[in-house]
Amino acid sequence: MTHDQFIGQVQNRGHLSTRADAERATRATLETLAERLAGGEAGHLASQLPREIGEHLRRADESEVERLDLDGFYQRVSEREGRELPEAVHHAKAVIGVVREAVSAGEFADVETQLPEEFRHLLEAEA
Image (tube, rainbow, N blue to C red; front, side, top):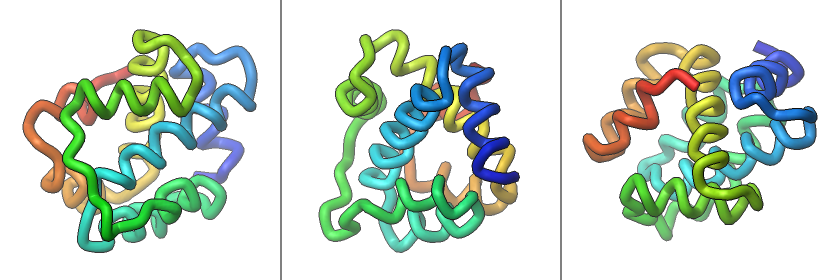
């Protein structure tokens, strides 16, 4: 999947009016996800995504992995994206759905193993 395809999918699934909005939603979601992953997992995930998309995952400082619960995750995405919480939740689900399709099943499973059960709501949702 190319960068343009990825952003186009996020824009479509997230019902975002512009590509810039899709880019912002992608950045907010992936930067927040990266803060939740340890053991180099953010880098592994990034390696299977288009370079520009993967950079959002590589920015996290792994020495400070945060144990955000799902509500905290959504709140942080909302703050980063500059959107109301319900919109940000919908956009995060769209981004994660595209990530799930863009990477191998094994890599996505590795991400799932690092997140608590409550994150299944995000990881399995169809936006």
